[in-house]
Structure formats: C-alpha cells, structure tokens
Image 1 (tube, rainbow, N blue to C red):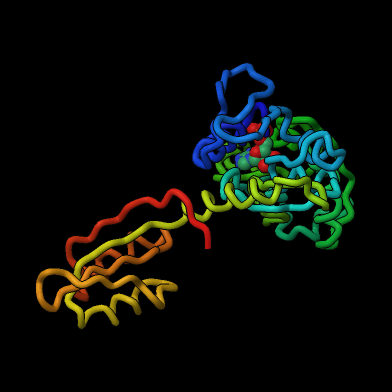
Image 2: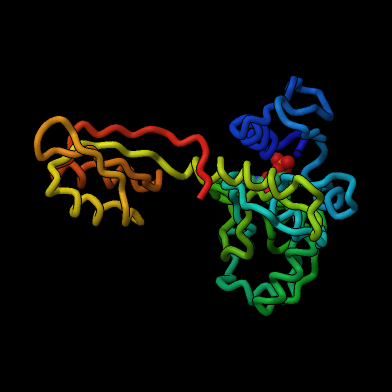
Length: 275
Ligand code: AMP
C-alpha cells in the first residue's frame, strides 16, 4: 500500500473497514501485520507498487490506475476501489489559442507521466515533444519550459490557480487492487473481501412502512429492486418494505417514497455486500 500521499489514508481505511486493520498503524511504520487475518502489509511509494506486484515481491497491491499504466506493468486489475479518483488532462495557458488536443502536435508538453502522455496524445493525433518533470508540472508553461501540460486533476482548482485551461480528459483514474496475472493463493479471497466493502459503501439499506397497495409503486421507484423484502405489520393493510438502494440516489428517492405513501423511513449503512 502507499506509504504516503493521497492514497495512504483511504487505503488504510479500506483495510480497516474490511476487518483487516493494522495491528498498529504507526505513522512511520514501513510494514505491519493485519489484525485478525494472515496478511502482511508493506508501505511503499505508490509509484513503485506496480513493479513490486509484477516482480512478485508482494502478492497484490493498492495503487493508482494511472501509475499502473504509466509503469506499463504486466499485472491484473482485480478491483476498482472507488477512491483516489482523478483524471489525467491536457491543459494550456488560459490565453493560448489552442482549443483541441490535436493542436498540441509539435509543441512542448510537460508531464510527470511521459509514457501515458505520449500514448494518449498520439491517440488523439498529437505527436509532441515531452518535457519530463518530477513535480509542480503546472508551473512549467509560466517558466517557459513547456507550451502545455499533461497532469492529474481532481477538482480543477490547481489548473485554474495556475492560469491553465483544460483541453480535455485523456485518462480517468482511481485506486485499484492489482495482482500478478496468476494471482497467488489467497489473493482472490482478499479481493472479494475488499470488494464487499467497496460495494457496500455505494449502497444503503432502506426500511419503510407503507400501505400494502403502495408496494408496487415503491418497487417502481427504487432502482434495480425487482424483489424487495415485504413483511407484514401488526396493523392491518400495512407492510414493512426493506430494500437496498444506491447511496447516490437516496436524496432524490426519499421524498418520492413519501409521496407514494411510505412512512417511518429508516436509512442505514451497509458494512459488507456479497452478491
Ligand atoms: P500522491 O502519492 O499523493 O502523489 O498520490 C498519487 C496518486 O494519487 C496519483 O497517481 C493518483 O492515482 C491519485 N490522485 C488522486 N487525485 C489526485 C490529484 N488531484 N492529483 C494527483 N494525484 C491524485
């Protein structure tokens, strides 16, 4: 797992949520055994993880999909982890006349991702002169080092602060679990446990009471709920409806459920989900 940077904390939280929390997640520790599971975690640079996995130094790794592609590692992506989301984008100074990625052809482009930038720009018809930097890419145009940049963006505020305008997305990334093409024993079980947490985080358990005749309307409103649990209540004609809902749609759904007669609505988090 990443020893520092943006991916460290969410990766540790994922292990904890999966019941594999570190024995002692000491700040400076470079390795730790997991609590309650025969898993040892090594903390290394996120950018080195694809190679560690490819070379079988470790059985699997959590790192950014961007770093996996940049390293060209021959590893298998077992799971998307739903954190560390960002996009690799091409950007130019606000005042530049360039509007399309293809117009970057022949220009100097600064990036920390030379391999990805070359491949993805070429796919869009732009063979460029790459300027490899190790950080602070966004200042390269201002320093006269490059005409454009290819950099990771999450909110877009760094681009704006540095007077840059995006020309578009080249690659969408998020944290992933990777393993060797022939995963070592136990790796797939680990992926399944982590996957059950990733899926559960995107889901809520919704319970409500409703008149029996409203069940059809409720089912129609809840995405993907062809078969909710319907339990009789003591009160005649009333039922309890239990259903899983996508967390992102809850805010729209609750008023609609009330409108068709649902009451006593309870929404609870889901810890694990195994389909
Ligand atoms: P770090 O160790 O903090 O440099 O994190 C590097 C990784 O975090 C990147 O390779 C991406 O996979 C991920 N990431 C997510 N959002 C961003 C962002 N806005 N800028 C840079 N990296 C990001």
